[in-house]
Structure formats: C-alpha cells, structure tokens
Image 1 (cartoon, rainbow, N blue to C red):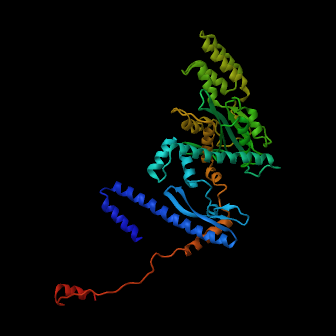
Image 2: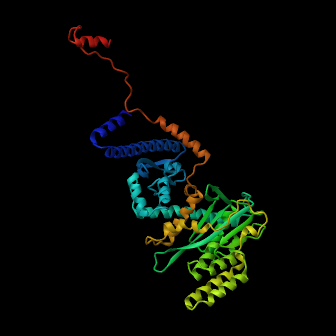
Image 3: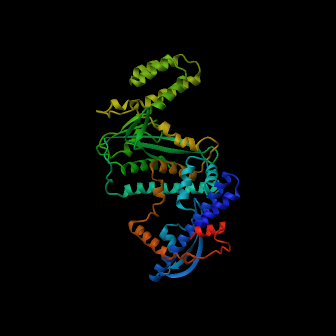
Length: 469
C-alpha cells in the first residue's frame, strides 16, 4: 500500500494538470491489477500442480501465457502435465476455464460483440482503446462477433434438435393468449447484386403501458439469415421451450409474403388446440394503398380505408373501380391492379382480431409491432455502405437476438460455467494458494533510538526534547 501511495505522490509531482494525472493513474491501476492477478494465477497453478502430482500426474514443463483482460494483459505461469494415460494437459487452464489458443478473456469477447451490435467495428475498436487496456483492430472485432454469434446459432440449432428428438414436449408456462409477428428484411451482401434476407420473429404475451409508452410484455426474438424452413423450426423450438400452448389462443401478424404465410404460423404453433388466427399486417395494407393511389389524401383513399376497416368487399371494389376509371397513365393503372390482387388474395386475413375471438383481453391492442422492431436490424446493418458476408450477417443477427433475449452470455459461457462441486474446489484452492504467499521481508518490530541534544536543557532545543519524554 505504501508503494502505491508513493507512486501516486510521484505522479502528482510529475504531472501539471488533472487530465494527465488521471490518465497516468488509470495506467498505473491497470498495470497493478494485471500484475497482481498474474501472481494469483501463478500461485493457483502451483497448488493445482501439487494436487495433480499427488494423483500421479507428471510435470513436463512450465510455460508463460498472457490473457487480455479489460484492465490489461495478465501474464502468468502455467504447467504442462501428462495424466496417467499420457495425455497432455494444462490443468490450471482447464480448471479456471481458459480455452486453448484464446488470448482474450470471455468478458472481453462477449463485451466486444455486445458493443458491435450497436456500433461499427471501427468505432468499437476506437472506444475500447480509449477507455480500456484492450487494443484490437476492427478486423479482430469482426472475428470476435462471428465467434460469439456462432455460439448463439449453435444453441438455437441444438434447441431444434432436442425438440425433434424428444418423445414429448417440454413443460412450459401456460398463457391464455400469445402473439407472434414475423417478417423479413434484406441487407446487402459482399457479392455484387446479392443480398441476404434476415428472417425476424417476435413473440410476446401482451402489452405493458407506462404513461403513454407501450412495450411488449415478455418479448422473445428470433433472427436468422438461414432459409425460412430453418427459421420456422427455430421459432417452433423457441416457443415450445417456453410455453405449453395446448389451451392458448395464438394470434399472429405478417405481410403475407413468401415464407411468412398463415400456414407457416399454423405449423409453428400447431401444439395449440385452437386454430391460429393470422391477420394481414395493417402497415403493409395501407402502404400498398399509398403506392396505388399516391400519398395525398383523397375521397377515394378515405372510402377504401372504410371498406377495409369494415371488411366490405363490395364497397372496396366499387371505389377502386371508380378510381381506376379516372386513370389514363398505364403505370398508375398497373399499380392499382397489383394492389387489387394483393388485397383480394389476402381478403380473409384483413381482419380485426379482437372481433374474431370471444372475450379478448381488456388491454388488447392492434398487432403491428414488427415494423418498429425491424429497426434493430436496419439501423445496424443497412445504409452507410454496409455489405455483409453470409457468416458475418448471421453472426450479427444472432448476437442481437442473444442480447435482446438475455441469452448471449449464457450460451457463450455454456461450456465454461462451473458446477457447484467445481465452485467448492475454487474456494478450497484459493485458500490453499494464500498459504503460498510469503511476506517479502519479515517484521523486525519497532526500532528505538535517541537523538543527542548537545545543548542546555533551558535552551529552545532542550525544551523541545523534554516535551517528547
């Protein structure tokens, strides 16, 4: 402690402003903690080696390793050993959870991925360099994102496999109503004129209102760039692992595009004994109306909106025919035909779901949250000249999914999490390693001495000496 205080005093004298002082203190703090943790790791390695030697393991050699933490690179000694069968191990690395060939701590990697889900790779690298001891390139940030995202993708795939292999559905929460919406959004690929479709689903139990702000209750998200057939399997597995839907009324919403039809929803939520109610997304209906009739307000648009809201097909055809008869431009006529076809093909799905079921919830609202939720993808992965490889796009959406569902850190550390037994071993080894610590200098006690006065007791220095007796 005295050494640290003396260094702080020295830094105060060596710097002439608080900015330089604080930056120097931060560097000192990083170096100190990295050094101390390195000593702890080395001591714990010694304890584990002795324990393994007692079990018959053989020491091969001692090696140096460095792991990058947020506060700096931690260097420590770890021992290569051979077990009774002759297999090579670094027992300390296996015990604490360091993977082979890893140079960064799990927290650094998962934190980098979480930051990259909101900012560009270059921005993440810059912020890390400014605020932590982590100095990596933007390319390394991309590598970390792909690795962390791959962990979430593997967890989702395993969830599908477990559901397919299981003899019965897992026991989940029982809810009276469940709502689901799905849509796709395209992001540009690295190959010319090629893009990737991000399939996106949100599943929620209702709505919570705080003042004027409305949020989705217990929202769960699924995103992937894989084919829609795999997407719907993951949706089904995610839902089955959280809910028992036998007595649940499932209400769904989509734009009716290829891959997001009513049949897909029915298949994904087939465990419910009720038919899955699917409505055409109102946003896309009125977006199609604006494309066909223009953005300006008109009597035609007003009457067509009324016809759609009242589900009056005769009124709809009457007003659309009337509008079409006023057109002379063939391109505008074609837009009207496209809109008519879209509406007629999905007429049975243009509905107000609250009027189609008995006793809807008191807080029931119209569905249509998908468009605002798509911004999670578009704000990060579109515009600004962004192009994505297949692996990079899949990793990014899986990282965002893991963050939103609160599963990213859990799945990334799935094979590193200690069991209760192993955690008890941790406490035991930490106590044992403390025995290895020896003070650098044995205490000699307080020393005593006398300073000669060499002056009359009546003098000023003599009186001062008498006051100390």
